[in-house]
Image 1 (tube, rainbow, N blue to C red):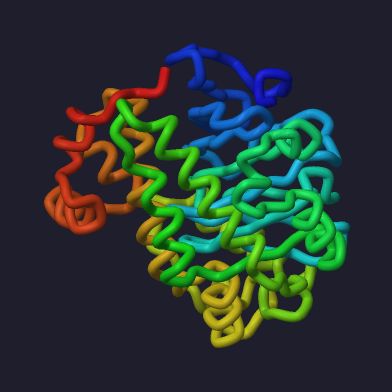
Image 2 (cartoon, helix red, strand yellow):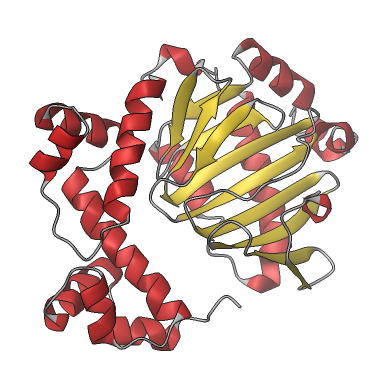
Length: 314
C-alpha cells in the first residue's frame, strides 16, 4: 500500500514481509517500518521528527486506518469544520478517505503504530470470519459516526497496543497477527461515539491562535519567553491562554516549551556535530550542566550518551 505513495524517498527491504521507508521531504524526517501481516493488512511503525505530516497521494475510500499514539501528538482539521487531536495513549479509527487538511505534529515529533486495512482484500481472509470479525460491519459503524472515532487512553487500549512496540524479531510477524486480531475484536465489540459528542474537537479560530503562538515560541528557542507579553501580543487573556493551551495540547505551555527545547536538541545531537555547549546555548541554556541535567531527567541518559547511542537517520 505505502509503496505507491508519493512520500517515499528511500526504501529498504528488511525481509519478505517487512519494508522500511525513510522520508525527508516534509521539513523534517520520518521513518516508517511497514510489516505485511495479512493480505490487505499492514502494521506501520511511525517515527517522525517534524511538524508536518508526509503527503500521501489519493486516499482510497476502501481503506480503514487505525492509529495508536505512543509519543507526541497528531492534529488535523476535519471537513474544514473542527480540529481533533490524537494524544499519547489514544486510539483512532477512521476511513482513509475522510477529508482532512492542515494536519501535523504540533510537538514537532510523533511515534505510534498504524494498522492500515484494505477492506476489499482483507475481507477475503477466512481468519477474520473464524474470529467473528466483520470488517463490513466495522465500516458501517464508522459511517454512522462520521467516518471517525477517537478513543482516549484506557488501560485496555494500552494493554493491547503497547505490546506491539517491543517484539523480538524472531516472532514479530506471528505476534503481530495475534495483536491485529485482538485489536479488531476490541473494536468489533465497542460502541463508537461520534467525535462531536465528546470534548475532542475545538473551534478553528481558537486553534489557529494557539498554533500561531506555539510557532512563535518554536522560532525563539534561545530566548526565555515572557508569556504575559505573548498573550497581549495575540490579544488573549493570560489565564485563557494557559487553560486553552493545556486543554488542546495536554500540558501547560511552560512544560511544552521546556520539552520542545529538549526535543529540538535531540535533533541537533543526531544530525549535527555541534558541541554540547553550543547546543545548550541554542535552546536557551547558558549553563551546559543545567542542560545536561534537564536532558538526563527527560531521556534517562546524558546528551553525550544519546549522541553516542543514537543511529542517525540518513
